[in-house]
Image (cartoon, rainbow, N blue to C red; front, side):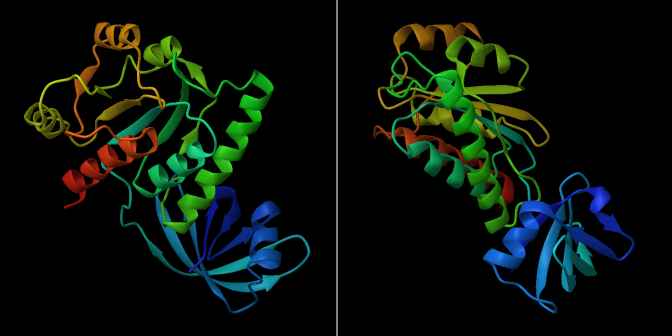
Length: 246
């Protein structure tokens, strides 16, 4: 069933209104018609509405609310992925899969070894495109929030951004054994905020690891093999999902 995100001002009593780009998507892309059913999510209230299309015109779609669901679909922790900016379209993949696994926010980071270094104008355009990827992924996997995709930051700016998080992790191939990783993850509690730093294709430089340690980041290992930048964050998010959703 197709899903749309709405705000409180779109809801009136037992009905709600779809307008703008969502209307175009509903009517012209999905070709939904009167009588078809969709879900609509109010992210602020974490409510999912089961709806039936009651009316369609040039300016709006009117949906009749049939039922509502307050069951939580989000991770009970707030996870922000600070992703070393990769080359090509790898960021698209990272955003899509991280959204499916429950990420709250993604911050692209320009690291010393980042091969992709877009100028400010291109960075803004990319951030807008990445946000659309997150929007689509959130709808597909029935999230009740849409992850925020920030504009790229420098490594130092990213460290400063993360300073108030409850936990700060940085996977690094030279860190302690896997027992330490398990202990660190076991100590993450519900309701907390977590920052995860993932390096670009070439990994983090020694100076970046030193700076992260000075900023109270905890280096961990993700196993005996070296993971690609587009895999590492997904692996760690999968462990968190297993910990908090089983």
